[in-house]
Length: 262
Image (cartoon, one colour):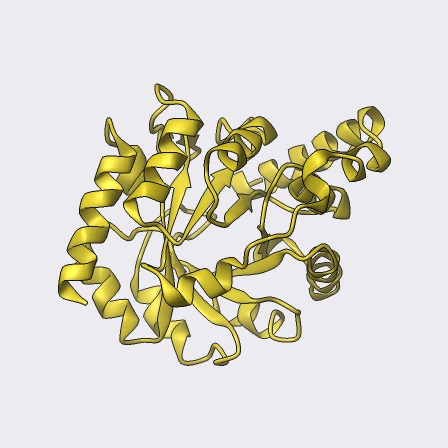
């Protein structure tokens, strides 16, 4: 089993356990369930295009930053001018939680993406109940039918959908899914190697109806300026900010520099 297979196997167990403890009715009765979502896709078009991520650790890098609280990080990102925030909610492999999503929602007004390995409609309801505006669907771990079902579940709740692909095969099975954004992950989920050329290679194959997002391995503004030439409007950045002592300050400096070369 590679790391992705292990994560998904654990996720199935985790979701079944949660279902046995917290019924759907409890999620639907949460205060945030009736909240009107803010479109991440639209925000990317009109702002900096940066989706800044709260990420404590990862299977590839181990600990990135576990010293800071999510409120300070996410409010720092909003003040920096990020167009959206990504919050990792996987506990075992990334050190995140649904509580992180709640704290982020209480701290910012810009759109929040629940970054999670989504395999079940229950997780979509969880995302809505904890204040997310958008969900991530990973084509590598879902069938076309599963993606279509989960995307429709999110759209019914007013949430945006970011569909993540790694190659042309995953893109082809994603094109009929009702998503708002297609994200090209530059990190190979099986080897964890990163190559931004992956975004450039796949950009021309992504229809214009989707907002194009480049994910992983973006560490300087020159890379973003280059990717914009390929039609990308969104750029998900996590480790580059989180590895610093003050992610908000790092994001502020980065976005100011980005504006100066725009």
